[in-house]
Image (cartoon, rainbow, N blue to C red; front, side):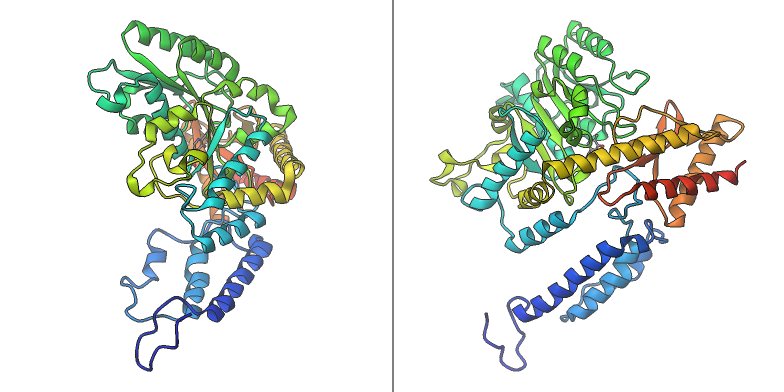
Length: 483
Ligand SMILES: Cc1ncc(COP(=O)(O)O)c(C=O)c1O
């Protein structure tokens, strides 16, 4: 610790330890109260764009500010401007949770503040990333040929997988780029996440390099259409580069038929990437095994513990069965990052674009240990059962319908009141806006077969049947105004 600064001189160095202890305790107390009372907060805030900014000075402070003022503003400006993803009635997007052990892991990782780019830069963090991703691999029932790395998001993980696919398809492009080569194609279902198309653009195949494949009545990829698309493209002189199959699509959580897709990928010698960003954790459930049969033959798989595995954002695990190809795509080792341990350890910087990486493995390791396999499985199963009873309730109600199979924790449904399809779309939007404005629950919509559909995504660790049914009662009450 620094000596006391002479009178009048600015004090340098960090916050003194005793001050840190006092405010960190205060912050942790706030977190504990927040988690205990999160239901007393409106899920969605009553703010408009610009409201939060208007309450913050437009310029930074010239002189130090007391920590009390910072925490006061956090409580009075920031928290009331939040959409509370940790609220058990948050059913929007894919509902996620920062669980207690995950939050503690995040706090400790930020105190250590290591940069785990190579073993030497953070030995325990580099090793724990191997261990934690390997534990997750085992929980998911994947064979031990898969090597895992943790990225910030599934968008990055998928982009890296596609870069590996490009490397495998055109090894010569590593030196010369794609110029002069036959145009390549990546295939994914019309319900694949937008991150797939972004990845295709980023690896340089252009929008024409992305071909979407039609889906069946369950919104799952039609493998016959995939086979035909690839055969057409090959005849036309294009080069298939990768297939992306989604297990748990964003709009409806549909599951692409992985078995037939694997066969097509092998027959055409095309890289197969599985987007299990949301649905992947369901592989822990023995009853879900049929959906995943064959995914172990994929070349790469992304699963996001920050979606449906109670780990605070960000934490996306990319598993790769051909890690040498992934490394070949990204490994550049400048002199200043060489070390004598390189040969006997993994350099995580070799698996993607970013050099620096946060110590994300700690929170994932904490989550897996604290809940254990049984605890995780029981919680996921509970989510599936709540989704299925919500869907049953919707099906049983006059004036409402369920729009897609309910395989995971997501229910897509709509109110059928209204004279015309356009009226129905408007009414569904109005119902959703009213639910969100109530602060009691939060939902988003999607469009299926041209019609507006509401989504209720169950994934929060504290969601119970009573939250789901209270939201259903609210939906019905609001809809009654349109009868
Ligand atoms: C199926 C699927 N894949 C990928 C993503 C992108 O995830 P991330 O936000 O981690 O990039 C999402 C986001 O919801 C998703 O639903």
